[in-house]
Image (cartoon, rainbow, N blue to C red):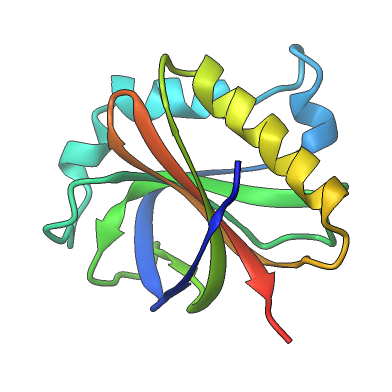
Length: 151
């Protein structure tokens, strides 16, 4: 799969946030991401978030990276908002976009596996580790945006 390079203006996302790491997510006893998404839907956070804009996509924003793929990071599940103190900022910049369609959550997990493989096979492409995000445009469609540094 060949990702598409896109330049994005910044945006703000508000919702629920956890701090985790890929290491913690690899152990079912310490994994938090699926529980966060379950809470997001159970509490209908998408319907109750103030300052929501017309963008109907749901987002998963990875931010506040401790270091790289091995360090801790924040994940915010949410919706696009016009602002607010609780909003996390998606950095403006260049992103490689990997798109997928299929049954959740299996498709998203498989897409992340292909993203890890892409970066292993392309060591010349450097991730920024400032913000990455998943944009869900339907119950079986996602575009995962990985921030990159273009020289």
